[in-house]
Image (cartoon, rainbow, N blue to C red):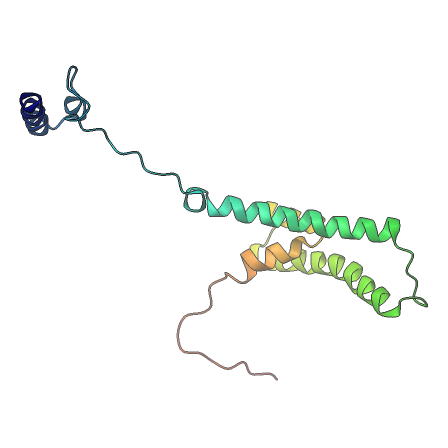
Length: 152
């Protein structure tokens, strides 16, 4: 047994000198003397692309907002007399989507000078929220000292 261990150490020393990964596992070496490369464990949270997860979350947001609108139109029996506050919220909900889409088209035309594919989000209910988060908020601000806005 002692000779086998010494032989294995000598084999490893020869393999380290040759600097090849295949030389570390030789045919006929015992499992106790051969070196096996360690496999890294799979971490779910760091292995996924964060952009893909963000897009999935936005898609779920769009489906949920469209589902809410569809259920409200098809199932709801609210009227202004029976539920005035709820009906007011629904009115704001249904008015905000087309106004936001219109704002998104105007803003995109103003900054790009033409209709771009990203403006197709205006046809998705509440797509302007995505446009605002990823395109409007991330625009670079002018460099230099801060100047207060002067209203005339």
